[in-house]
Length: 77
Image 1 (tube, one colour):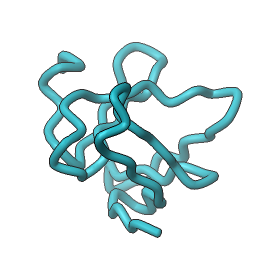
Image 2: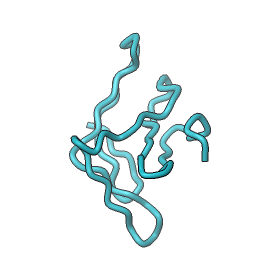
Image 3: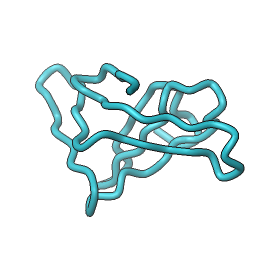
Image 4: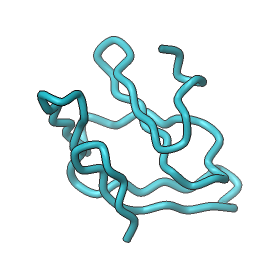
């Protein structure tokens, strides 16, 4: 899996790093989870849970997303 191939609402582990692409249509690329801030729990069914909540804005600030990824399901605030 290449990072640029992660679809909207998708996630993947690349080596030891986790990359997420929030479900917002304007966010065009995946972002790496910072292990100093977030922890990732892998579940037996292949889904993940990320804690605490995830927030992301595009560099030009034309989009912002905040919410949770729980058992592979994105829930916005």
